[in-house]
Image 1 (cartoon, rainbow, N blue to C red):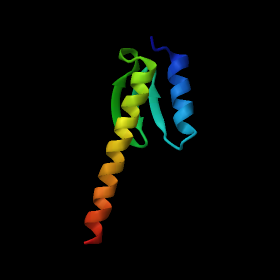
Image 2 (cartoon, rainbow, N blue to C red):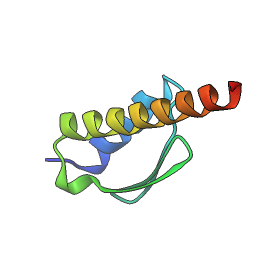
Image 3 (cartoon, helix red, strand yellow):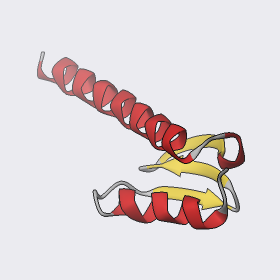
Image 4 (spheres, rainbow, N blue to C red):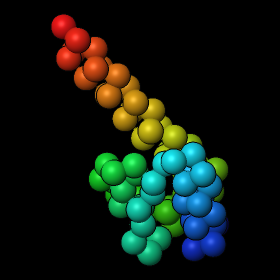
Length: 72
């Protein structure tokens, strides 16, 4: 089960990859500057990591699309 130590470990590990995760207690409220609303208590550690990666993938897809549109 998730606890504050495990959440802190996730936040610190993502920081090593220059991905900022903002938390309020056990809630993730931001991922790399984008608003988020995840209750970490409802995830196992690996599930939360995968969810954060999906959010990052969506951000990358969106930014890539914007760059392509601005080149036209």
